[in-house]
Image 1 (cartoon, one colour):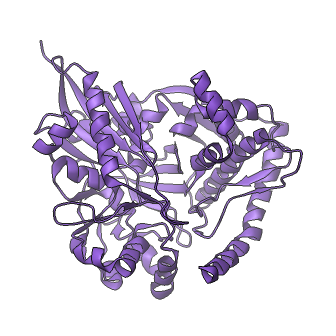
Image 2 (tube, rainbow, N blue to C red; image 1 turned 90 degrees about the vertical axis):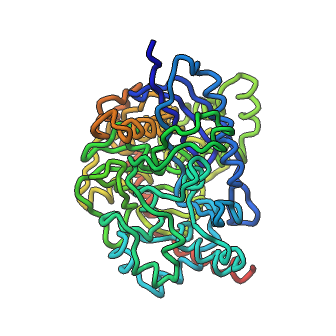
Amino acid sequence: MKKKEIIIAHDVGTGGNKAVCTDLKGKVLFSHYIPYQLIHPKPGWVEQNPEELWNAVSKSTRNVLMNIDLSFHQIIGVCLSGQMLNIIPLNEKGQPLSNMISWLDTRSISQADRIIEDLGDQLFIREVANLPTGKDIIPKMLWIREKWPQIWKKTYKLCDCKEYILFRMTGKFAVDWNDASLYFLFDPRKRDWSKTLCEKLEIPLSMLPEAHSCIKVIGEVTPEASKQTGIPSGTPVVIGAGDAGMAQVGAGAVRNGKVNLMAGTSLLLAVSIDRFINDNKKPFLGMCHVDPKSWIIGGAMETGGGSLMWFRDTLCDDITVEAKRKGVSAYQLMSEIAVEIPPGSDNLIFTPWLAGERSPVLNHYLRGAFIGLTLGHSKAHMVRAIMEGVSYHLRWIRDRMQNIGIQIDSMHAMGGSGTSDMWMQIMSDVLGIEIRIVKNAQEAGAVGAALTTAVGLGVYPSLEIADDLVRFSKTFYPKSGKAKKIYDAFYKEYIALYEALSPIYRRMHTVNQINS
């Protein structure tokens, strides 16, 4: 009897790693999730332990394989997806020289301001079609060079999260085109590193991993990785892509014009395009697609789902305890109390800028706030206001995308926030568009990695197969009437709040610099 061919894929996220085993059509046979921690050494600093990330990958893989009978199944390939915009300095042996500096980290704001002032934003837009902020990789590289010179001297390669896991799996230093795009030293149009920017920033090209197509078989599982993960040594490894790229595949949004909302700690409204375009003043994230002939334009919110996570962890201990007692998600109980609150949250607006904001404003000084808070507002009001505030911001991104010629009339959605019916209905109402929820939404990134593996190994000729294979669990349609009028009015006030608060936050940062 011929063994059934299966694929092992990983989505190494911000809050944890999800390992999945799928068949060749991306159907999830088994999955296992292991959470890990964010480390906050100082205010504004956010790090993660690379060894903890690898241990989660290893342990979750072993757990999956324990539940898959390998006497009846053959692993034909492995693929990785992971969080983006992080940095880990590695020595020649691939050993981390520090914790991974997270994409949420804001320690390098001054470096970001300086390089834009010295080089000008148009140089970045011309060379790499993107513009770095204080939470991006380039300022973090410069911060390491300036603040940790001994580590910089020992650094052989500068890698993102997925590239470190790839090294542990294969022993190869490499990066895919999608992940490389968000180093902001890589031109997604030419699919190559910018020698001009590297020279001006004095970042040696030799420190950057070699870049490859996302569907390339980059190597094989090493004997050491085999011992730790349980995957047979010699199993082919497809290089894969960052979570933004894999989400597009796993959501069945590969073909030109298709839109996906990746709704996790951060939110990304991403559009697949076959002709590269971007905003030349406040660029969206411009990336190579996992499909080697296409691109992705993404509007990112730094703490979309993260805003609700912060509220849960900071102010909802009672709900968390009750959720554990009932054996349900705390988010489910939060949605249940918020559903009784009317649209507009009784004149309460939340601005979800807890870690600065990227799209459509590129402003790392912004901070979150509840506006209009009164003695009459409850925890339920605040939960709903968070959901509405995130939805207002997504509408802002959508509207600005349409200004550069990208039409968005409907979208697919996946990730943790996609499991909340209430939140998805609010988003549909605020944006005025249809939203289709991907089946197994929280596993869609890993499913995208599995389908990428299948294409990389020649099982399918093109990644467009994902658009035909991905299934949906439900669809939300925008409602008209009173709610629409309220949301339209508060959306305008949301934009007005940005205009009013933005200069205040910049001045507050200046005062904080004096105090430090």
